[in-house]
Length: 390
Image (tube, rainbow, N blue to C red; front, side, top):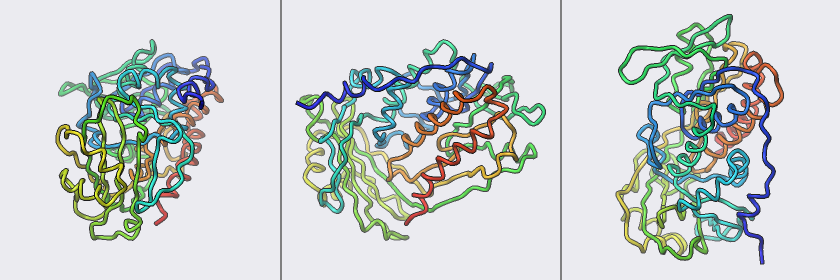
């Protein structure tokens, strides 16, 4: 009988914390990437402050993260990292309804034809639940604080970031003295504008047109078995690879998530936000293997949600010496990726691991931050290369 995949996760080695060499680190943004950055910083800083104006009290989709209502795919080594930083994470997520999919419980198709899927263990849950579980654990750390505030600017001393200016609601501006700042404000970050205003030469943004619209619908599924025989599936359409301005189907995916629900996501390329109703989703499912239609037999839950990814963006820091020390970028602040590739959360976790490894190998993390910038850029170079391929 194969080993329980949960036991495989529990037996993975844990990263040991290192003593903290600096006083205050600020993370600007409390989404997935920001929370993971705060987690690894907490092993090294006396105090970590997350500045985030949108702080939900439960596993709820946030208005500032419109893509959070849609399907997210955390690749297996990303789950390994989460288990290392948050021992018992998988068990707790399952207790709240997440589904653990072991080898053989995934299906991958190309134009409806089965494609071999590597043996892997993955956790299926909505992004709000995943973020809630991470946020709950990060904010419980004794040296992590959350400030319900919006960063408005930076302060400097001798070419290094030494303060964050922020505003709580409509109140006046305040200042937080810091040793290190991490921009995790995502694709809407205005950090480069602030730096340019302050006289720094900033990176030139790269843009790759994508034009991907996706629609997510939810359906009830039976409470038993706990984890369905097929827990997640993806059918990609090869015609989407030649998509230009005309609408073309890109794929359909399904995930077993908490609340005994199926999350069915359709993706289309084109200039129009296509497939915005359940009937549109059913039409695409009808051209796919039976597993997709079967997931839509249950009762619909809520309304269909749509999102449009117009383009992927990257702000390559090719000249770190042009920027102040003590400032890092992570997650979508570095690069926002084509969601069809399912690498967003995985990339954020891997970047946090790069940050963690850097912090463990330097006694002056703020003063030597440009080295970390180069390490993060090196990782993103590899991920971004996929965005440039047709």
